[in-house]
Amino acid sequence: MAFARLVFVIAGKDLRAEIRTKEAINASAAFALVILLLFSFAFDLDPDTNREIASGLLWLVFAFAGTLLLNRSFARELPNDCLDALIAAPVSSAALFLGKALANYVLLIVIELLSLVVFGIFYNVRWTVQFPELMLVLALGTWALTIMGTIFSALTVNIRLREVMLPILIYPFMVPALMGAIQLTLDLMAGKPIGGDKVSWLEMLLGFDVIYTAVTVVLVEHVLVG
Picture 1: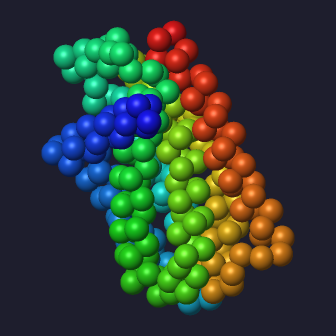
Picture 2: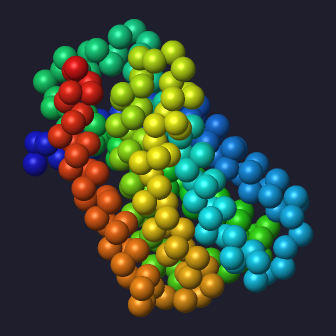
């Protein structure tokens, strides 16, 4: 219980800090919306083609916009040596990491839901047909992006070119999760429930989340403390 309380305390601190400044969420949301709008004006596609490209376009937007937000996860602690104070505090590295990951997860979900609304309007795609299953895929895929982005944000926090290094590091590791999320979203956008061969993609996405969460929690002590 004490561990969970610390996780929520750290998550709440990060959420309040982001709501107060709105630096990362404004940049991330603006990027996602601009990309979606540009693509809608650049290509005059019929509804069937829109559904076919929907899943790939959405998850690419989520991945690129997510890195803008995740990059600030540990960077916001650099002024006044706040990061050193957090590491020296009587809080386990795992609780610190999971608290920041939880805050990032909430912010990413908000951006993705906003992007889905804009996407449905400009691309004429009824993404609410399989709403519960789509939200499940969105939750699993977003956690995969969040957990990997948060650990690499901690790894690159002291690098001068961290804005460049974070995408370079995270995207290769995200390929399995993105493939699974794209394949599942493709059918859901067409109104088809998850079934048949697609179940294996869902299992792979869930396995990715479990394995990488466990690995990052184990490694975060070495990443933060060295």
